[in-house]
Amino acid sequence: MTDFLSKSEKEYLSDYMNKVSRSFTLVAPQVESPLNHYLSTSYLICRVVDNIEDCTVPYQAKKSRFSDFSYLLEHPENAEDILSKWERLDWDGLLRDEVKMMTTGDGLILWQIYAKIPPSYRASIRKWAGEMAYGMNLVTDLDDDSFFVTSNQIRLPKTAVDYDRYCFYVAGTVGRMITELAITYYGIDGDDAAYLLKYSEACGRALQKTNIVKDFAKDLARGDSFLPDEWLKEVNYTPFALKDVPQWWIKKVLLNVLMELDSSVNYVLCLPKTAVGYRKAGLLMMLPAYQTLLLAAKRCETLFTPEHAVKISRTTMGKCVIQAQMMATNDDNIRAYCQEISQEIKTILNISTTVPSIDFATVSSKTL
Image (cartoon, rainbow, N blue to C red):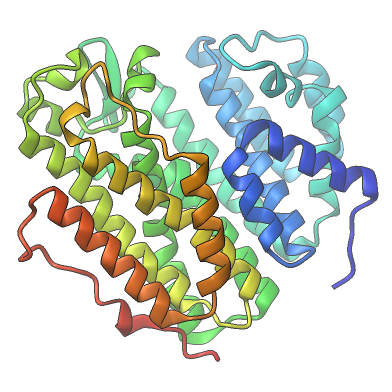
């Protein structure tokens, strides 16, 4: 495919990916061009949604900005008008580079790149970034308690179903979006495409839930929590106090993440082996999540305490990069690695082996 970006536009994507996402900065370059640029653009557009949700302005102000964002998805040619309005607004709560994304100086080029993406790819970005914005608007609406509720002055999902629903809006939508981009780019069809779409949401939920566990204490310090209220009621909201949290409850939280991760392995296995770059990218999202959950299991005694800390080292991340490169096209090695680490997590947590495991062998791609 013909490269559609200028040198300065490529430098912009690379520069801003480094500023707002160190992890995805490693992922996108694994993918063939120009798909890597479609992925980077779509990720940064989703960051714009995050910026609207993360800023500490009243809901009505956010609602207006979500509406502006939806308009931008349909009319990127008018980005300068919207961004000129945005740069006169308050963006309290955002980092400096995040604020700059919302201005004509640093934000306009992103929407100009988006406008240059071929229509079939842009349609997927428009659909799923729009769905993300719709969901985040629901989350921030304090008058709507059908989805999120406020307990102990913390806003959080009401039920386990709402927990999954939240993870869909903030990450499952991204999973669907980048999967549609990959399906179009690699010409995937039939059962392989259907399986990819089926498992893309589980993959997104798995990564989001991993981050929710990792960042629990940090989120709580900001007055946020994303574990469901019905789970927290089971332990009288002790996680909010960062003390006296029963181990059985911590294991329940971690097992829920593990089941999502195990299911998401099938996402990579469904990819045709000709999609080498995207397979590497998928593994580079999945393997660090497994390692993060393994670290959480090893530190189970300190989870949901003032010592809550679950961040893998750069050395571990480097090993994940090497492993992703080595086993990208070897389904047997992918299965073996994931089954081994999944079992290690269960063993550390002393979780019964009667807990169902995912049969990774059943969904391997038929496109060789």
